[in-house]
Length: 124
Image (cartoon, rainbow, N blue to C red; front, side):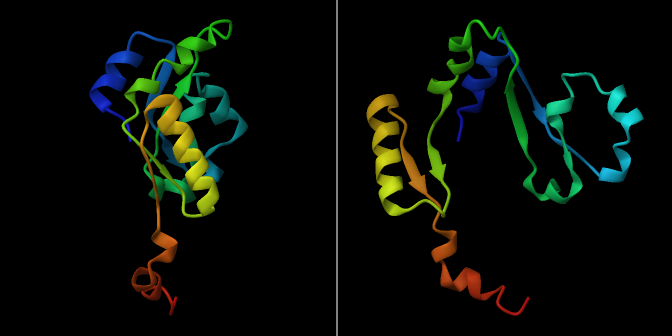
């Protein structure tokens, strides 16, 4: 989770590209159509099956000789949610690293442990 106001203020004057992902059917991405895309638009194209993600991307496109600029958004991170597939030991280690080194709090998604939620999909 980002502090959006701080993040957008920071990236507006940097080497980041950002924007919502456009989801397209594979059949619509012919070689001719792909050639029409500018290089800046390519990172924001994804296949239609992933449309439910509603993804917004932030892509570093600045000077590769100055990668520190790409890390400049670190203080815009409010917290990190770790996926449910993380083992508890990995959650603790990652959480400690992010908190101790960067002051970033973490939590862990427990959606796969929610029996009530999972039971709703049992008959599909």
